[in-house]
Length: 468
Image (cartoon, rainbow, N blue to C red; front, top):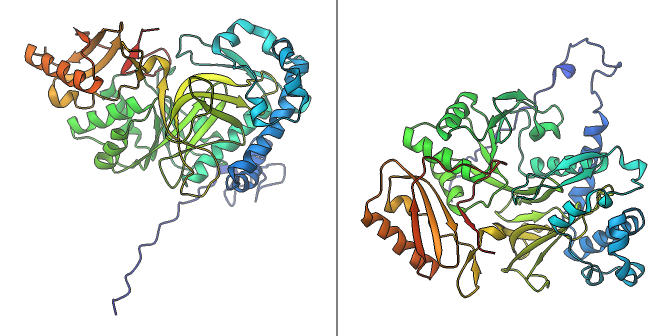
């Protein structure tokens, strides 16, 4: 009989109390020192976990029935208090007056970004329910070149906080530990509790670094801060890992990286495991709507956050995609009664997945691929996402940064930041490689800039098309 093996026990995360709750602290706190109740902005999202931990196991059918009941309330509100929808839904009154089914709901027109821009204040409710709290403005990043402004409320903020808590609980994060958040719009490192831990009672410190700093400087700051958690765009994470390998440096305490804002390519997960010994957890969200899908705690699938959003993935003809198919992402924000976003086409493309092996009934997306401008368009009219250049550095180690821009149906511009000019032979190798991957012989123009800047929102696109 084999000997019993001693199982390695998992060390529990330490629980660190805030200064107001430390035993022996006599500082007055309305007489409630221990256990001190949480304020409403944390207590309500925390209480929501009881409901969320139940609904995530419901069947897809039960989830949809409950979503449609909420959509029914949203449509009644929008059609009577929002001038834009009052006019838009005039021709769909029969649908609104019927017992609303998902098929009837899908007859309603899509809302485009340009519609939101042109609608202006006519998309804002004239009678926001008082119970939803004071409205506030949300401005999208404008990565499509079309920034938009919508209103949120205390109610929508509560759902964002509750879902943020769910994401942390799913992945068993220790919110007392340090987090580094690398994103845009910061000129210097700021030491404060950012939105990353705001949904965590007694959350720890989060350091925000400017994503537009050189990657070698970001790595140095990351090592100095030595966080347990990192959140940033996939392209930045990949650059940090590559820079750390080249310099023989790496963060010591890092347990997990969370990515957002760009398509997460598989090789980045592999590199993070191999070189940093950490897992990458992907998230899908939009500023104007909040969380859309979180990575499953048991797999790399993304679970749609159905309690907050009704998410459709549609073919070009408007019919719903089946598992394995890629289509346009269309969302309905279920609880925004200030600026209702009903069947709003985000501009993203995603792949639908089968039911997840974890057992949750929340719909599955297997990957987020990018936006329409990230399609390669062939002269035949066929469109495909070009995931083709991961061996660029194998062909030419001199390449430090690259970007491909499709200028026409026959011409692609290759922008390369290099340590030294490429030989004509290496340029030919790159062209042959792309021709083989794209299955078409494009004309390639090589351009050698000193730097390829990010978009204003901090994102970077390795491929984009200017072909309409």
